[in-house]
Each structure stands twice: as C-alpha cells, then as structure tokens.
Amino acid sequence: MGQQQGAYFVPTKSYWPIVAAVVMFVTVFGAAHWLNAPPGETSFGKTVLIVGFAGILLMFFGWFRSVIRESLAGHYNSQVDRSFRMGMMWFIFSEVMFFGAFFGALFYARMFAVPWLGGEGHGVLTHEFLWNDYAASWGPGGGNGPGRVGGEFQTVAPWGLPLLNTLILLSSSVTVTIAHHALKAGHRGKILLFLGLTVLLGATFLYFQAHEYMEAYRELNLTLQSGVYGSTFFMLTGFHGMHVTLGTIMLAIIWLRVAKGHFSKDHHFAFEAVAWYWHFVDVVWLGLFMFVYIL
Image (cartoon, rainbow, N blue to C red; front, side, top):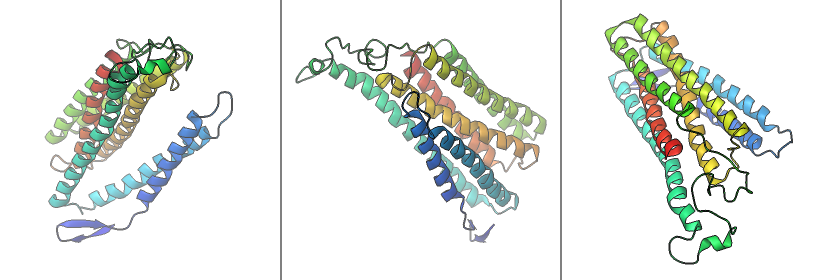
C-alpha cells in the first residue's frame, strides 16, 4: 500500500488515475455524440455514455477502496492530514474558478453581446446584419434570435421546482452540519440519521431536476438549441447537477464508512472534505437560482 518516508506517506503506484481519465473521456464522448445526433436518427452515443458512466462508478469503487485501506492501516499522520486539507481547499478553489467561467459567460452574453447585437455601443448597428425583427432582449423575447432558430420557447418559472430545490439544498446543508457536530460528539446514531437525510435530500434534488429538464423539453420547448439562453441554462444547471450527483455518491460512501466505524471524533477528514464540497455545491446553487432563474 505504500511506505513512510519522513513526515509523508508515499503510496505505491496506482493505475486508477489513468482509468479515471479513460472512462471520463468515454463518458463525455458518448454524451457529445448523443446530444448532437440528428433528430430521428439512432445514435451510438447513448450506449457509449452508459458504458462510460458504469466505468466511472467502477473507478470510484476501486479508487475509494484503495484510499480507505490506506487510511485504516494508519499510514496517515498529522502532516499528511494537513496536506489533504490544503489539497481539498485548492480543489474547491478550482471548482470556484470552473463555475466562475460559466457565470462569466452568462454575464458577458446577457450584458454585452445581446445589447451589441441590438445596436448599442460604437460602430455599425450590428442588428442590421441580422433579421429585421431581431429584438435585443434576454430570454424568449430575443435571446433565441427570432423564434425561427430553435422555435419559440418559455423560461422555467423560478417559484416552482427551482424554489423547491433551493429549499432542499439549504436543508441538506443543515443536516450535514448536524451530522458533523454529532461526529465530533461521538453520537453515531445521530450521525447516521442526519447524514442519511442529506443523501436522501441530494437524491431528491436530482429527481426534481430531471423532472424539470423533461418539462423544459416537452412543454416549454426550452432545449440546447434555444439560442444562447438555452445553452447557458443547461450548461450551468447541468454541470451543477453533475456536481450534486458526485456529492451524493460521496456522502453515501461516507455514510457506509460511518456505519462501519471508520471515523473517530478526532480523525474524520474524509467526512469533512465531503461536507466542504457539499456546502460549496449549495452556495453555487444559490447563485444559479438568482442569476439563471430569477434575474
């Protein structure tokens, strides 16, 4: 499993990183082909996507098992623990930058690109090169270009499922925090109860988001082809949903580890790391709810 060298634990060589790279490539490759398949044609992308997703689950199982074995073997000391904490902090910072880029794209398209296409700013009135009835407004009024591009569409009302999902994620932040305090106090039953509730709330969020997507496609005609509005909507909410999925899986694994007695009130960084990640996901959703659904 590895060896101690000074203050650090040096693990043995692992093939899991290359496995992760391959299955993630397969998943994205399949998703891209499935989403871009011509209407009415059968695409192999869906099958490739399912295979890639199954590979990701297998990778998670194998990699997590290796790390858990190292932890239970007592190889991690205080210096390694600090390294883990710094690594998780930098990872979350990279995730902040990841979503910051997408929020930046939303801001640029909405506040600059659309008004410029309508003739604002200096130089030639750019709308003269578009359709005569182009309306420089965000959403169904103009963000789609004239409806002839992807068809007329409607936006998702913020006070239905989006509000419900907001309350669900806020509640999950409370339950995971209660579970954390219970872990520090050594109350195992309370940990399992509130951590289980957190997993259930995460799964419920994903269920409602899937329902929202189906409603958007079938009833609102809001799709990836709905101009820049549809692109940014599904890009932001879709990537966030992927993060919720990963967070829910990790919380479920932590629940199993708590049930097996892997943590103590003094040594439980894996629990803390997942809790940090979950709080980050919740904060990102608040930004999405405000800037994507309401404004």
